Image 1 (cartoon, one colour):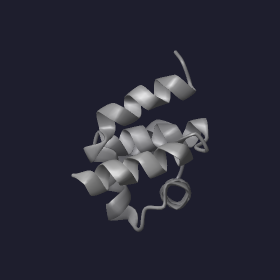
Image 2 (cartoon, rainbow, N blue to C red; image 1 turned 30 degrees about the vertical axis):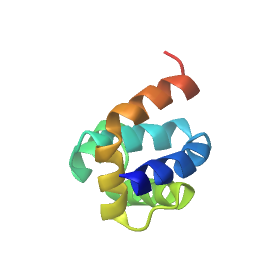
Image 3 (tube, rainbow, N blue to C red; image 1 turned 90 degrees about the vertical axis):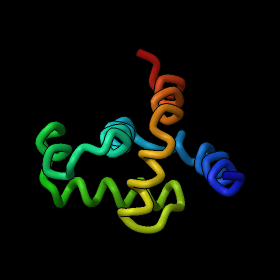
Image 4 (cartoon, rainbow, N blue to C red; image 1 turned 60 degrees about the horizontal axis):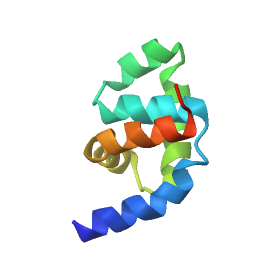
Length: 89
């Protein structure tokens, strides 16, 4: 558990570098929506979605698509709370 918290703290500093669109993608990944459905919801191609995933993973220092998915699902509630700090409703 400590490793995850440390990783979240480290990535916390990087979360504020995400664009609004990257946040949308990350939050949709967090609720385990399939790739095609995310692309459809955001009106983008799956290729564009892959680019967003790669940029998010790079900014948060997470390796691979599966790693990003695990991170997002595990930290979903916290990510939603943090998103409202960066982008209040």
